[in-house]
Length: 395
Image (tube, rainbow, N blue to C red):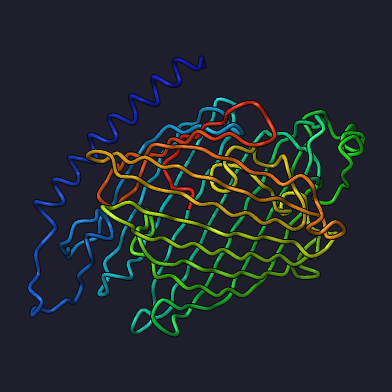
């Protein structure tokens, strides 16, 4: 399919989807949303502002469908559809939901993701988060390093992943619990299996993770979340620490993996928002499959760098973003990011510190504060400029 045809198709689908969504919101406003007096019973009520940002309450569940175009250097143009289903809840701050997203790119890359959160218990103090990720993704492999010398080869990233996290809210905004990780991977070199060893030798990498395998892991998690909105926060803190280990006998490779993620949001004046994030990720073992080794770049962390180009067992990055309201549903942002990845042997001794700066535009497409995002970024390694179009915030 030609690029112009695909762009026209994406814009048409997007326009139709937004029009349909607007009609749906109007219908929800007329038929479902009710203003409930504080003295009345709240049994069976959910908060509509968790769905559309409207300060009313509803007695029924709801759903939403949003088609969208997107772009990233790793995938080129993509077309995607996301569908959200929100269920009844006696507590307006704890709404169980299911979100499904499918994407297809001009490079014949396919990705399907489903995420859900289910609240349970007498006071809904338990939450079960589930994430399913299925992908068939032709891509480049650059080896495990934090510099790029032009060496790479094409392969097909074929993976299925299921993550489940059960948490208990001990106090307001504070949760802790456990993880279950399931992985199935069958990556293939597009040059043929006979050339795989030679290709890996050229990029200076080993063969860990390059043959069909299954992984089972367990872990612990701790979360503090006081954000005012999960899609576009304007105040509050999100802090999370995860640790996981892939089990012997149930996994081909045994290794540990940890993540530390801290985000803070502050409203300054006239709805101007300053947001920042510090993120670190690590793998502990020489047996970690290549796709589990932390990587810089992409449309979330270290925008401006191609995802998967830089990999190493320890990664850190920090980014700051200034968000400015413009007019109606439009906003502008300016951001800067810095970070790097290291081997444990050369821990924090790299001279290749990476940074990028950029600007962006946001358009809020529903009252839940979900935004289309257009970002332009320039890194300190290359002359080219990267741009990103997607339907979710970087952080």
